[in-house]
Length: 355
Ligand SMILES: Nc1ncnc2c1ncn2[C@@H]1O[C@H](COP(=O)(O)OP(=O)(O)OP(=O)(O)O)[C@@H](O)[C@H]1O
Ligand SMILES: [Mg+2]
Picture (cartoon, rainbow, N blue to C red):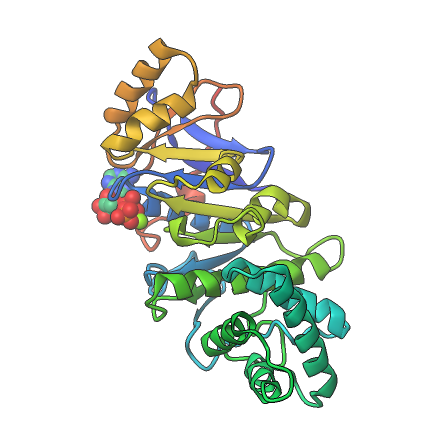
């Protein structure tokens, strides 16, 4: 992924660029109102102008009414609407074993499942796929599970988790109903999914489907794919969750994760996000300042208090960027946010590197 991103300006007024980073991932943190989402949008706009596909999982309808740069394709799909379908069982070319394992991988992320339940799910899914003559679906699987209960009762864990995902998504004949092969802005609007837990499950299902599709494409995926998630604190941040997988392995498939959150405390999430090449720390809340200062320079007490003061003094739209092996740089983001008013090509017409 060869994106060149202008991040803002250094205190001396020089433009700060992200070029040829070691990985394509971005993590933006900071307290509410510190300027995270505005900065994220500026990055997305620049990526779109460089022909990336930006898949925005939008929980707050932030991107629904936006105007992307001229000439950029823009699609917004309500995940609860009829145009959106997702079918983890519709995997052309895969046998029933692989398909059942795919479903298990998914459900393990969203429900607690011991080895017995896991085995049961694999068996029941395989036998459903054998008897289903049409397009398999989660509703079909759920009904099949209940039809079995008189002969060979299936555990509640399996029956309930299948029923839950069947309730959440409408199944079509494709793994996912949106095109992930051409550049542009693709917004999946999740604002109608009100429960945070259900939203996290649905995001996990979408990410897993996108991931599987991405990995099964030819070795050279046609278009760089950036998964954009504002407010990512509610995700399933388990060790085997998709967000962590994207951060750890996405680079191999030209796939980036751009995540934004106020503060994350879950261990796996923190360690995975701290591998992102661009970590933009906007002003944290008062509790987060000391923690972040310690993370920025562990072990050095004089430096910690220096960064604590620096973090405290950050204004809206300013962040600290720490590149590996470098001292953190203070960056001020342009306040010009409205894409209709900003033509990024003109706006960032000269490219200067910082030292
Ligand atoms: N670079 C900037 N310069 C000046 N003002 C800015 C800048 N970026 C954002 N703002 C102002 O700060 C407000 C909050 O910005 P933004 O919504 O991006 O914050 P946030 O960190 O995403 O907050 P939340 O966590 O609540 O979503 C914006 O409405 C805008 O007025
Ligand atoms: Mg925001």
